[in-house]
Image 1: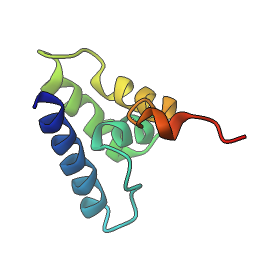
Image 2: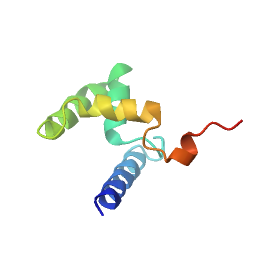
Image 3: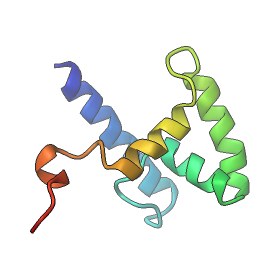
Length: 87
């Protein structure tokens, strides 16, 4: 049950990101990962959002946005069947 709730929250997060960007955001990227990516790109939105999001998640997880970005890069949110290499 816990994983189902987490999956739903992540899906809502990804949907919110696409809606906030009026469809310009990646449909598989969370707001946290996008905030970290944008900060690395020197964008104002990232410099504002990343510290704010990290502050919200600080009681639960340090460096939340960086970890979310790393998870996106690694593809760790994907099921095993999607991570397998096609030969």
